[in-house]
Length: 278
Image (cartoon, rainbow, N blue to C red; front, top):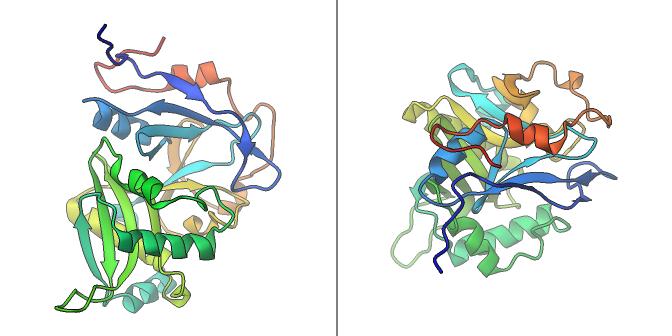
């Protein structure tokens, strides 16, 4: 018997597990698979509605009583680097950038392991082996690029010095930074900030209006740095809006802060010609 993929996206909810951003809370995700010839259109559409990609899955936080996680993006046309960010650009001006196909290498994995061991030793990726790393990089059904930053170009008899890497999706309205990692011994270089600044530069050169940064979480030290970027928008209450004063956004729990799953799914806008899920 021949089986075919369902025409309409099917949405599911994960079981609760400890939140990686706010202590003492449980997270839950609404997700759907990303596959087939409609994958890029679905990724484009749902990214505009606060979803993120992980391999062949699109997900969005849907916690029972918490709505702290807010998808964030930079309006490229209005972005102006701060003085501190200008200094970061100058400090890293000697780095070379290369955009390649999403293909995992041993050099990348070695840098990834150093980054995790230094920054996220107790995180959900801490035990990721090289095969899982390769899957994270290579299993993409959409238009993705691996942006590599090196200290110098490779020369005969000398391997290039890989400094930072970012897995990036190319959407119809911007760049989505799926995951980045960098040399943890170069804290003074502010490489995480530099990668974002360089993606703003790439998007501007390509005529793309946004750079998607993932989730900003008020009250989370891990995610607080995103509020330092000007022209930042957040996806809140079903629409994109300027961040404004970061202190005005709360991470407080409230039983009515999250709508029932059925209502959330009913409000998801799908690309033209894609039927609604049953």
